[in-house]
Image 1 (cartoon, rainbow, N blue to C red):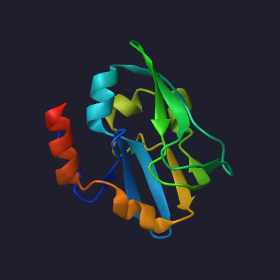
Image 2: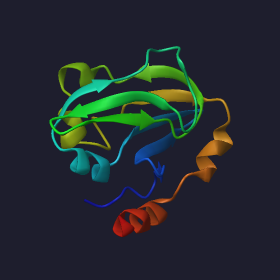
Image 3: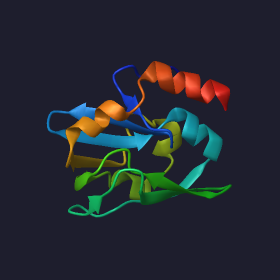
Image 4: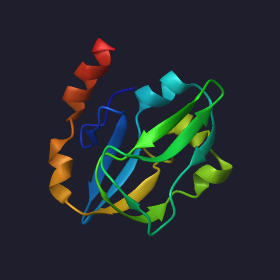
Length: 127
């Protein structure tokens, strides 16, 4: 699977898509493939504040539980409730159906500090 060029990426394997004033966040194809079959996703509530580089939720696979790290700080304005009933979307469609949260960033320039698709691909090649 190719890495979507319009997204930005964190070292913790989260992706960010800028959508006007807000950003949509999920985990990468590489991350879901390393985790294996996802069986549960724990996400924050609408209105919660998340802080860059701090855990904001977790994904549980048949192999392990892995924390989700916020790539940027801000207030949660929407949560993907489809993942409650269909956590397998993370494996099936990490960039479309399986977005995790939409946040209103407290500092939109934090997105500029994230990796481009090319930089992320280089990083995962080295893993």
